[in-house]
View (cartoon, helix red, strand yellow):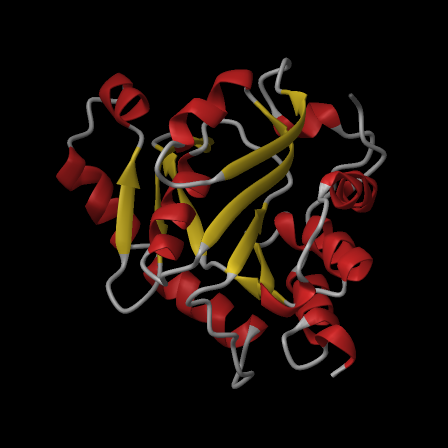
Length: 218
């Protein structure tokens, strides 16, 4: 399946989401690429959007290959992609140190995207976690581990494209996994006709439009 762009992918995902309880559901986007996808789901179902602040830890010399990911929060958490770390002869401590070096950028994004905006309480809520696609899955896995600490009642992962075997890696982290297309070309961008960078201004604009204070007609 080839998507025209992230908005097209989001509309197709929205059509797959049935019986959504708008009063008890929050869409959680992985910035930056997941935000335009998530916005279409929010628009279709009248849902609020929030972010999980996560950064991929790129392998030395190959920044697009994830050796792990780091999520922000009261206690920053690093998830290590063991197979990739082994290829680059990196220990868990090495990857954790690399992740800590990314925390200032996460803080910058938090201030840029959210400012002083109120964020929704996720306890007891159904979360629809959205990205524009999954390759190694490191950032999504790290995000789900962070979100589980917020005590949601249910987690649905919704992505346009992912490896067929990826759903099996989410046992205990996601209740439902929706993926529209198998990752067959090795890169998420190959599933899109248009796959440009999503800039900070776009993320901020969509959060202003679909933040919790503006959803459901509020």
